[in-house]
Length: 610
Image (tube, rainbow, N blue to C red):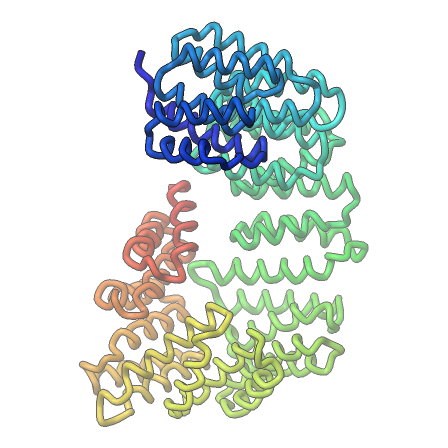
């Protein structure tokens, strides 16, 4: 009769684990035990057997018993091993490990029916105490005896009329038995025991189910949730689960519908719907997000989310326009009017700072009306707002000054914020923007010193932007006897910030003609791509970025250019296949890029939609 090596190894580790974890009894360490351990560890089981036998008779300890059994088992002395375990089970009927050892002897001697009868008897003899049921069920599970584990927990369920009924354990066993329908039912049954397990159930299901690949499991879960929601509409946790399900599947309209129903039923005054709207917005499901916010707006001022919903809905309207392939000044004017109307209706106070700032940004950076933008920010600064809100407004006003070519006025504001929030990301942002002012003015050494400090910023975006500009200065200063090319590039960069697109392009063209072989070549191409984007000339932008992506792939802008191409194809041109192609390029050619996580998510989403 052949002994399976894998079974031996499994038994060995299980018994060792049980010895330390279950009995928690220190093994007596006399000379016999030391010699027994010595021979056992060397695999000399015949010699170890005698010493363990002596120690077992002397101490009757579980550890000596198990080691003695293993020595017999490894030597295939199954008759002796059987007698030993039978004796132990008679002496201690509650020693389930001894019963499992006996069962293993039966299995290794091809007495499967006797092993089965033994395991069934163990289940029959198990008491109604929850800890005993759990212990026996786990023992069956770790040995891969899932049917017996299932029978154990089901017996426990019959005996426990109230309270916890082994839903988690049963769900796990059904998963191991490849019965996903019953697994899902048990996880949902846990919510009937207590809805405090809502997040627990969601975490378990999200680990088990791949919502993009496991179509059968997704179908089973959806059907079960719909049945339970319709059968027990007052059990709100099923509605919560259905909302969660739709979000996992990115079926945002369904999530919003369920959130509205739950909000009405519980009288939440828009709380749940607002949360779902934010999730939809982050996922660029603007239509669903807008429906969520419109629901709250219809509730009126009775909802504490009323003003925030108006703000978010206005932002969606703006994003939907600017994400089109093209938009006009009249489109922007329509959006600006909607913002103005909202401010007139709500008033200008702390609660509407977000609306006011968004409108100022539209005027300054999209409509080229910095005077209107500045007036709005100045109004906001005199309101009763927090220091951090004032800091944000000062940075925005500085940005507006840059557009108006008042770069040193901007610098003063940036320095104020940097000083007040020196250890805060807000201060880091101000420091970065101030470094750019010195860069525009040709104070390259000072700008680089400030940028180098920001490489350690806690904000990854600021640190990355600082590193890029620092490297641009480092790589392109000192190469030629003149600093003129870098100054021309900085001038073009400033012109771009001021929406003077044609002047910026002209400056970059002059730089290329005057210094055709300068190391700024990739930066010039990338900057042109940014300008063409601002002008909504998508094909030209792609042309510039593509050269950077392919010919300068190993430079710092390679991944940025590739990402921008992907976004243009996805959001502006609507070519999902081309967008997926460039997201995939980021995953394979720029593995260390900051864009990898987002590129993977977008690639998977586009692949699913193609």
